[in-house]
Amino acid sequence: MAGIPSVLVDFNAFLKNTSYAGKANKITLPKVVMKTLDFDGAGIGGTVKRSVGKLEAMEMEVTVSDYSKEVIGMVGSRSSRNEVVTFRGALDRDGEIKTVIVRASGEWRELEFNEWAPGSEATNKVVIDVEFFEMEIDGKTMLKIDKPRNKFVGADGKDRNEEIRNALGQ
Image 1: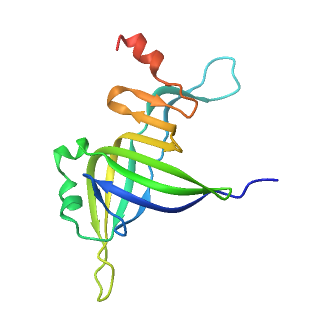
Image 2: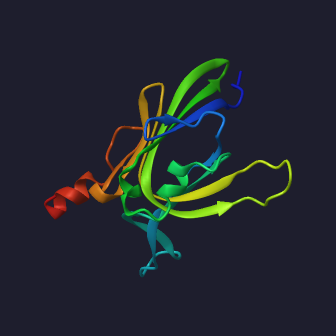
Image 3: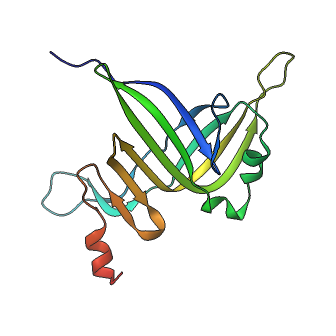
């Protein structure tokens, strides 16, 4: 019998050791896309994509239902790259709750306020250009990307860029 789809039951966000429970109500995790080049060599049936071992730019969005000085203060701050934002979630997988932890850091680039109307929620959305991203489920690393250190570890525990770093003497 096939399992039912996993459901994110709830999550909490933490910035600078402060909980944003009830305030950080929506996140969009980054899209992970390998950088490729088109290769069309002699004797093959057409163009193929070849990975160059790097990732495209990654960004994530966080919507906060609060005009938080800490959150708004991160946007445009050169030190924002050093702050790790942590999201802890409860994932229902086939009726069993699993812990999901996402950690990310990068440049806090964009701030967008919602439309104002009487009785509306005071929300704002921030965009973070992700340089570090880690996701673990029940203590097992599913993905770990550390762009400044050229590391990209998959769910199999293998670092896809280890051979590249070795070839570069890093």
